[in-house]
Length: 602
Image 1 (cartoon, rainbow, N blue to C red):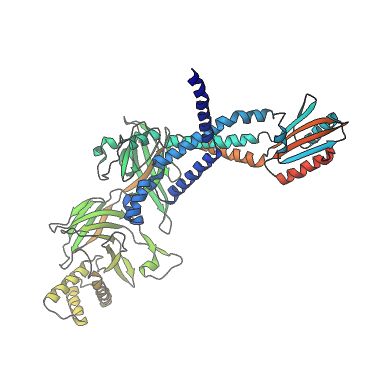
Image 2: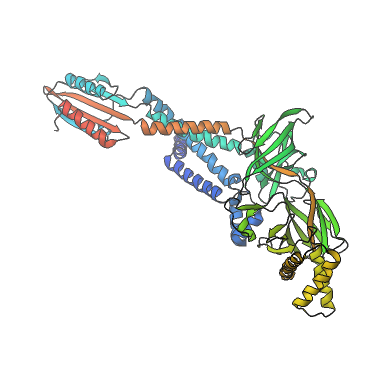
């Protein structure tokens, strides 16, 4: 029994110290600084990018260091969530400890303060007056009322006390700012979906690593709960297709978030500025229930999301949705009268006959707007840009594993009356394209040029001498046979363009050239689906924060305590006053009070 009596004060002291630590200003400021630093990192460093991008940017060593610290997805890390949670706990402790005292002071300021407290205020008036104590008290009450205070007075054991305050709702500013921090951080924790993060941290939820898997084959360990309380995911949805799940990047993998409805993209539309930049892109969307019932339909554009049942769908990007491309394959060094035909969708890999080469269709662009100066054309202030029309990007892989990337434009460009098809290639990812300009023949194709190239190669194998006369003779014979309608001027222009194009093909990394003949375009909309029920609460928290800061800055608090004692036909006064704003002006005000009261220092 004695040990319990002795241990109780110690236990109570430990709890009191813990509460003081949690509610201390020093701890709160430290947490806010840490949170600010982490948020700056999460803002400056692009989050949730492929790990390969980070490794190229920082190098192998620092990439690994930053990965271990979780800097590539700061807001999903355990330490960031812990800082936010600890800040909520600290601020809530501070509010719980100080709110009763603040409410009491707002209702009524304490009448009495110790002499040491009075003399410790910002402004102190201490001295004697020939006036009786009651008259001095009345004069003090009058001057305080004239200054906007609401004074109260009392008498205890022959001593007169006066207490007054101005701006008593100033404390409400402290309460609102602290409450706003709790509300904003608490709602952010709710939006962060801590239970799902806990499942991920404990290994019950494991991100999938293979980005090429169809949705039906993604392991169930990478699927988040259907009725998740908060999430944000992305989906690239081609026109005419439907999706019932979105993807969330997690480290070097991804998680799947099933949706309570299905999203169907009926159509997608894009409008451009004259510079080629997208002006507006719109998705025509229908939401279906799992049973097929139409829940909602409408359009989604940038900054105009569609909302349904607490879920918002944003328009974030667009890309090719698997357009069908039909191409002609011209074999270099052989007559191009009968080119082979290839057809496939963007994203597919095609085999180039029995050659062992494969063609991966990487991307398709409907419009390609570039400055005229980039094409070597004369600048035109009225029309500075030119649209090169459709283009497609593909990767050719040889039988030995080598690869090169190509970009081909469908429509020719014209220089000095001669048309050219533009063919770009590069052999390293990220390297600039090298361009080949293939002259257009009389029928709008590149067959004449490629037949001329084949004829030159045959002549070279027959040991013909390379000279201007030989080049002209071989082209004249070819043109007489396959393009007799060409005029002399057209022949001269075409021959000059061909001789300029031949050196460009010296390092061409493929034995054939693909030329786009036709296409069936198909858009894909990049949609972001979010469910953040705490967002509205965060908005109200911001309102409380702004209101609290306004009160703190524009509703200053002034407090006055006074003690008056009778002394040999007169009286003595000890007055202490403080203000948390405009202290110089308040000092002048107190000096005026001293003069009005007629108190002389002792």
